[in-house]
Length: 282
Ligand SMILES: C[S@@+](CC[C@H](N)C(=O)[O-])C[C@H]1O[C@@H](n2cnc3c(N)ncnc32)[C@H](O)[C@@H]1O
Image (cartoon, rainbow, N blue to C red; front, top):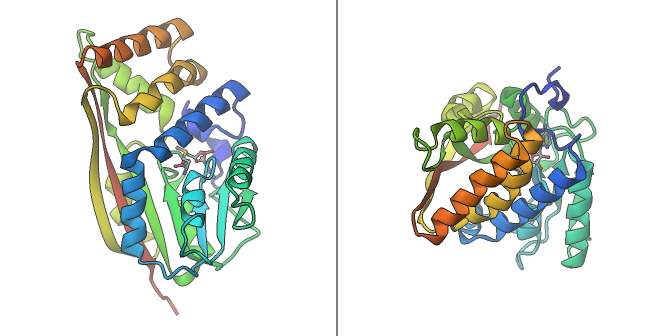
């Protein structure tokens, strides 16, 4: 049976169950900052709009991290349904619980620790299951989609939002324009860089019918904006993944920050949302 503990690559977001506190602090800060950015607010607003929730649906935020998306949903005035948030990292789950409590949302969200490849204690409980940048980090996306199918009511809906991380690029002044550092970033921060290209087929193979999709380009040209909260995290996470020394990571980020000050920064990645419904089999 696939499990996150079978992970072979260096992806720091995929190893949160065993990461040191410095890395987890950097991850938590990055997740919180990007969730507040207008790009992610728009993405979440778009898929919640497409779902047209009535307010009473049970929602699962799988791979919730600090619960930023679960809190966004639970804080909506029209929400009366239950929100559950699950992550493999006990540290991130505890951070999520603390933030939910500080925001007065403690009684609206149930936080649990678990591996998305097998959430044994829950079954057929949810109307909507959201994977907001989870699937690019898991060992086996097919097993996670099968598990999602089991966790949802038979005609429940799944929302998969993630980056196409083979398109992620930060231009640098290196002779290759940043191609090698892009490659290092891709393996340090993601396990399934091409998974969103495969997602329509994976959804179909695992009992879902695609109903809605939307594409985005997160491009910062001249000054860093959406990507600016990634830069401090990279100083910690690239060495933590073992792909750069602390000095190399620091030089790399210094140059990117300086490019932003000089209005010569360029970073970009494609993102996609897909919403699919479980196909009745019996
Ligand atoms: C990029 S973060 C996204 C967090 C959150 N969804 C957000 O957008 O703020 C990826 C999250 O997936 C979690 N994760 C990775 N593999 C997992 C697995 N097999 N089961 C559950 N969570 C997992 C990590 O701990 C991390 O919190």
